[in-house]
Length: 196
Image (cartoon, rainbow, N blue to C red; front, side, top):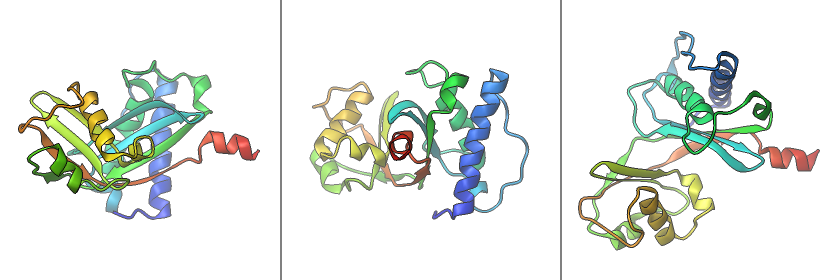
């Protein structure tokens, strides 16, 4: 997609506006009606990740959507702050220490593989995001997760565990898709405080 600096700034501002609207109203607030053209008006999936002092504080996103990128981002920013079930809703006093990170996804590329070894042969470490789906369970890792889990076999096994499956299992019914992201965001507050 290759967003330019102005488009990235608009998306970051939109994410902040969504979270600040939620903090102010203490509930979901719809995005103000705006006409977005170019990449911001395309139907693209996105994820918004919140971190506080380098630690995950919320992450919400969707792989495919019928909404525009701008609308999807508004929803995912609010969801990351207030609806990630792993965390309590963000509070106003925490907001100043939160770093925003946005990932805009390419369309999903289905991969047909016979087993885990074939998937590992096709997977591009540090490039691919990965989505696994079987029956009513699914799990996704963004490409950023390679920073924490650089070994491909461990990457796949952790993703299976995230879906609720045994790490060493494989099923011919697993649907596999990969994607890449264009990622950008705030400078981590850890670095800001170190440089200050």
